[in-house]
Image 1 (cartoon, rainbow, N blue to C red):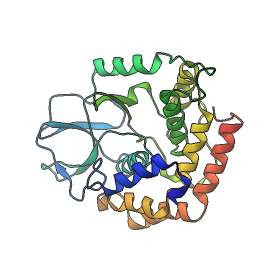
Image 2 (tube, rainbow, N blue to C red):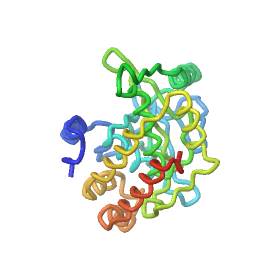
Image 3 (cartoon, rainbow, N blue to C red):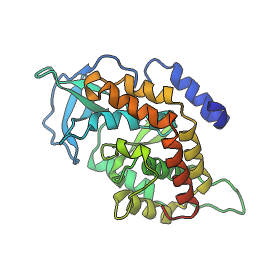
Length: 276
């Protein structure tokens, strides 16, 4: 079904699938934490910062019956597949009790958060008389906003971005899908009122504009993801993060038309601006 995607996306996805380990998604065995630094994690879902060799992973566990680890794994995998860059992630084993957590690699500090905020809130000059193509940041934020709506993520915040060096430049990463809801994949309804995702989305649109073409493209790209690819994401996570029946149910959403109906409603809400 990748023939429905632009050629550069299809080429990127083919390269990603051929990679042995693009972002930890295909890791069969957990990484083992080697230490816990004296750093208090910030964030509603963060449990601990774990050292794995010279790297640091920000770790999460399930809470109150919510499958946070599986949710993060699913939507981080899908985001990466759809060319929304995310930090490297992997299952992280605590050798003290053998608990396996979801870990996202990186270092977030006050300086980096301020740098990201400045980057996101500095308006990009766009002269339609000179170019009909919106700036990449406008298109990127438009696609990410639609992706968060699809994933039923009400908690996109300015602090949920990261700038990292990449090929002599910088790459903008999005992270934290812990508040997303896997159960919403089968419904065409969207509850975004008073959400951080809506608030931040409006704020960034006022500064950077909106690319409706890119937004609708994201719907099309999600629609083109086969159920087999989704099942591959779910099968690659640790077995105890989600039962086989639960994995099959999510995969079925792609093959039985439920995801398609959600995307129809999402496209409609973008076009009539009821979801903006």
